[in-house]
Length: 509
Image (cartoon, rainbow, N blue to C red; front, side, top):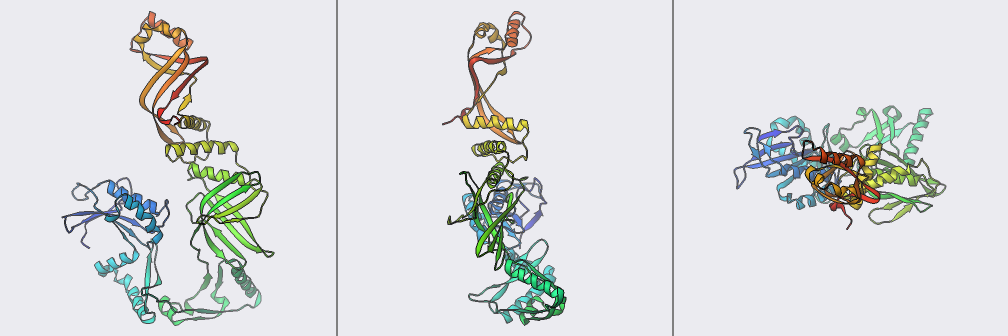
C-alpha cells in the first residue's frame, strides 16, 4: 500500500490519540505523515466509548500533537488521519462527526475506512496472507451471483469473530423468501411445556428455545443449505430471539399531585420484546447512570404501563445525580408518569398511583443543586462523590457563594504586613476603620476533587480592628523591634462592621 515505518502504539500517554503512525509519499510532497485511529465499532452518540464525540476528540488530538519518528527520533506533525472501523459506519455517526470535523477544519484531511473497504485493501495488497480466510467468502460471492443476482455479502468484523449478512448491490435486488419448516411433537408433559413456552413467546415476545429431540422433522431450503450450511443433521438446538428495535428518544416526566415535577430527559428506549399482549422497552444499551424499563400489557381490554428502574451513580456527574434524586423524590409522591416523545412532543401518560420508594434526603438535593450551579457557572464537570463529608459540604457552600455573588463573608483575616509602615502608623489601628487590600495573584480552590481558578481578589472591610493579641504584638514590635521586614496580624470587624473577600470575575452583573 506504499506506507513506510509503520509503528503501532499500545495506549499510554505517548499515544495522544494515535493508534498507528506511518508515512507515504505524496503527489506534491516527498512525505505525508499519517495517523491511524482504530475502532472496533462506532455510534452516533455524543459521548462514550466508540461515540462520534470520542472519535472527533481523538482526531483533534492526533493533529494537535506531533509524534516522535520511531526510526530517527525527529518530531513529525500529522498531515492526514485515517479512521479505520472494523464494522459498518452508519449515517448517524457521519452526521454527528461531520460538523465537528468541519468546525475544526479537519474534514478534508480525515478519511474513514469501514470493514468492507478494509477487506478490499487486504485482498488487494496481501492476498498471500489471507487466502485461508477469504477463500470461503470468494466461494460465497460466486454462489450468490449464481443463486441471487444483485445481492452481495456485507462483512462485519469484531474482536472475536467475522460474520456476514446479505445486502442488495443492485437497485431492486431482493433475497427470495427462505424458510425452515419445523414439525413439533406436543405429546406428553414435555410437549405441554413446549406449547406453553411457544404461546408465551407469541404473547410477550420472549425468547423461545427448544432441543432437536423435541422436533419431529426439519426442512431447510436449498439456498440456506448452500449459503449458511444449514442442514437438519447439524442442528442441536433452536432459539428464536427478538432483535431490538432502533432507539427512540423520550423524556420521562413525573408530575406529582402537589405540583412538583421532575424529569429524566433524553432516554433512548428500544423495544427488546414485543408480542400480541405485551411489549418491553428499555434503555439498557444507553451509557447513562439509570436503566429504565417499560412493560406495556393488555389488561381487561385496556393498555397498562408498568415502570421499573435500577441505577448506578458511581460514574455520574453532579448534574446526572441531581436529575436522578429529583426524579426519585417525585416517584415517592402521588402522581403519574408521562412519557414525552422528544421529536414531536406527544405525551403518553400512565395511570395515577400513590408513589413508591423512599424519598432521598432533601438536604442532599439542595446541596447537589448548588454543586450543579457551580458546574454550570465554571464549566468544570464535577463528579458525584457518592457521599459528602462535612469538609465537602463546607467547600461547596463557600464556592457556591463565590461563583453566585462574587463575594464571601469573612469572620477575620490573618496576613503578613510591612512592619515599618505599621509601627510608624500604629495609632491608626486604635479605632475601628475601613480596609481595602488587593491580591493580584490567581486564587485557586479545591472542591470535590476538582480545581477551580477564581481569579484575583480584594479584601474589603468596614469598622475593622486588630485582635487584642495582634494589637499587643504591634505595640511590642514598636518598642522592641525584632528581625524581619513583616509582621503577622489578625483583623476582624467590630459589632455592626463587615469583612468580605471580593472576586471581581464573579461579581453579579
